[in-house]
Image (tube, rainbow, N blue to C red):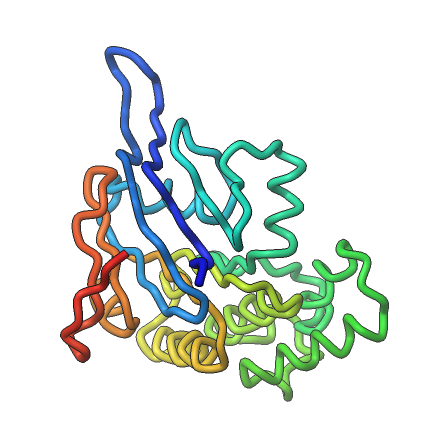
Length: 236
């Protein structure tokens, strides 16, 4: 079966020439539907660049990226925008919620831009907020919620349109340890329900909670393995 994500010989070069920086250096990897993957690396390792490629926020200098069977490597900005809207749900370190909107309205907002009817987007928003345990906070504004609750609203917003890929960039970076674990449980539950979840992190404790770890160093895949509870090496 075709992997959900397939990256082949992917390079991203900044300042080509004498002072070039190879943010990604001939990266190969595949991610199957339904995986829970952590992409881990220190600052400057290339993990954020790889996230931008996987999220169709940037295009590679060379190589190919196939998402859901489509080669998105050479798409135009408009085409990439369409792919992002349909295929990917983003969760960021900053919650990016609109302060004067309720939790439900924040979740509905991207669905309005997608042209989803009022009844359907209300149903999807309620369903998503229930999925992250916020059915009793739907009418609360961000200032009336904790950091962990705000991040759960952001997760509900990411999953409302039912995209095949959830891409989470340092989603616990602004949270205390208790809220961090709450968010990790939400992400793991999404995975158990059949979602493909890709988590970008620099935190080994977070990476220890996912099924598969891809470690990036100097723009290359340094290691790619199933977590030690399985003891199984992953073969791309």
